[in-house]
Length: 118
Image 1 (tube, rainbow, N blue to C red):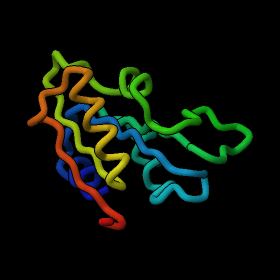
Image 2 (image 1 turned 135 degrees about the vertical axis):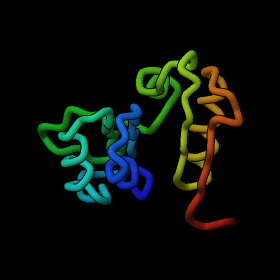
Image 3 (image 1 turned 120 degrees about the vertical axis):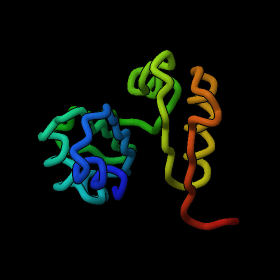
């Protein structure tokens, strides 16, 4: 969230897409702020997936992050995109490995893990 806030504070128009996975609508952290920033545009786009429960009018993804989803959402590799992957270790490992399989340069995939360490 700090990266997104800083991007807006700097007035950047560099394209940025956040793929945000949550279990349910009620568990989306910063839900209102993210929706407001997404509505502003300016090169920022919010893409969400809810893995367990979706509200009746849900239009986002309804599954865990997978190869097909990343292929649809990730920036094309010919743009030399930079990806930040943050979350529990299993999610981070999966998403980072899939991005590399899709052609992202390994040094352009930055990771941060949180949660139990073992």
